[in-house]
Length: 196
Image 1 (cartoon, rainbow, N blue to C red):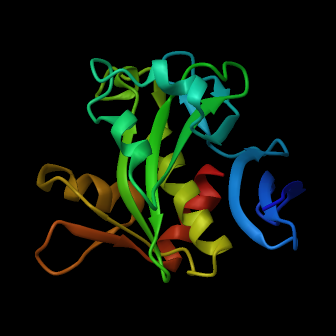
Image 2 (cartoon, one colour; image 1 turned 180 degrees about the vertical axis):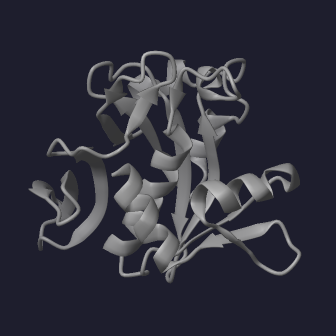
């Protein structure tokens, strides 16, 4: 099958590279970059308070050496190989070779399911280098949900100790007493306005 590539700017102010088949039917998003500077919180250096424009790209083969299990908590090399999952990295325009965070999601037909999300080790805890990495990762998943017609809905499973954190950070809601959480349209819209 012949494939074609297309580039465009979405209504969400992103430059998007698309993979199309020979009939110009959408196959998948190859990369998403913020096309226009916007005065929103992106990622912020915790010490200097300098803000950095983010770039959100699908993981490529050249990124594999940077996904060392000794550095990351999750086995991202394995995650990339799982069918029906897409893994994206968050970097900055100023330093695109340094991965700030990673996210894996699946399209479940009526929402985006977050399989794994992780900030780089230097972006975790009270001494993290950059603030806003997790918010950016979840916001881009919400935006993808809107693009696919799912009204911003995303679902994920939280570690028990992070449930309150996700409620505060994302406006996520818990499904009953389970560890499964979701972000609805209102919370998704807020995240996109705050981070993207």
